[in-house]
Length: 292
Ligand SMILES: C[S@@+](CC[C@H](N)C(=O)[O-])C[C@H]1O[C@@H](n2cnc3c(N)ncnc32)[C@H](O)[C@@H]1O
Image: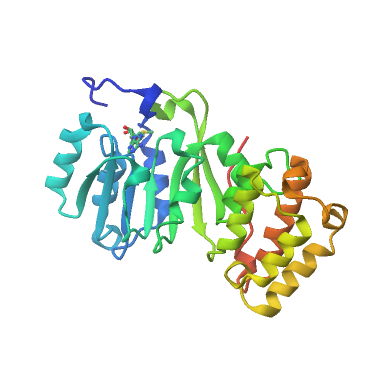
């Protein structure tokens, strides 16, 4: 780690990866090929960008966009761009930069963007996966099943958009300087876009949802973008309508529901929809790691 660097942990979450085993695991999980265009979000000194660019030809992406906001990293990232023609550096805020050609994200992004990333990544039309270092409590919620202790709005936010796997946990001293809490490695594979359903989840949790449960279901049944072809939409909505949770709350407005009921209802909707997808066997959230 360059000793002259003064790192800003408070404002920019500058905890640089120093555990090379984690970098290897990131690459192994991302399974990048020569056809991919990869974004390293919050590139820092470029440890991930460099590892990606140094892969053997069949595994080195066509292009690597290293995105960074802090100019103190310019010498490191400029040196990488000079050494590897496939690397370019994009200076600015991750949330403002357009990355239309990106097929994979492989990154240790600033933790404060964690909650925004699941929604933001959906802007990338060509994205096939995101392999990300995240806080462990976020990761536990992201993979939690309904009814599990860590299940909460993060679970729905992530699972409505991705099939998610926790691949590993990372101890605080895997970073320089060490993080305050453990981190983890998450692998996200976008689900088929379901804008109506995603918006319903967002509305429900931002409490803009003055809509009654029964009207939301009717709206989703009629919204082809949300729930696919006609017979399936009916099946999904019928399955949710028939559940005891929904029968109990179907006259209520989303914003009146207790969090536990809201979570259960939204989870039923998502899981009924996932179960009705043709590739349903691959659509469940899994947790392969020892999240101990
Ligand atoms: C957790 S560090 C990771 C650095 C590097 N990827 C690594 O693993 O060693 C997060 C990086 O994101 C940068 N960063 C913070 N906020 C950012 C933002 N809004 N847009 C772009 N980069 C940002 C920080 O300057 C820092 O380099």
